[in-house]
Image 1 (cartoon, helix red, strand yellow):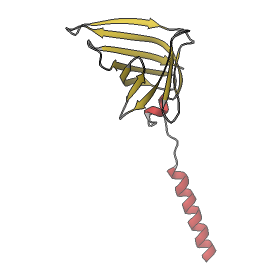
Image 2 (cartoon, rainbow, N blue to C red; image 1 turned 45 degrees about the vertical axis):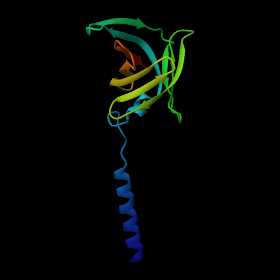
Image 3 (cartoon, rainbow, N blue to C red; image 1 turned 90 degrees about the vertical axis):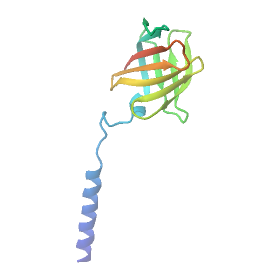
Image 4 (cartoon, rainbow, N blue to C red; image 1 turned 120 degrees about the horizontal axis):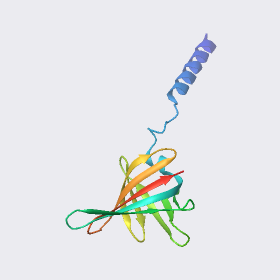
Length: 142
């Protein structure tokens, strides 16, 4: 009798354990998990607002060798390479919802992810301390 009770308990424990485990799908993954890895930079839109709030946008397209790499390190390092001699190292910090902060030595960006999936990542960042306001929209792909 004791063996049957132990066997039934073990079976119940295993069924409960397997049914509680489910694979996390793309929509429920945290933003940081979705961001990780190397992304090709396709283009960047830089929008400058004059004192009356009128925007002026300049779009720059990039080569297939240009990239942004969000690394899975203790300090959340990020590497941005645009052109042969334009490489910036910094770090990123993901915040609540779809917002994150990019810190490069040249500038800091308060960012919001607008699109993120397996193959596409688009975000807009406001340059911290810019006056007049400057935003940069990055179009990334894998």
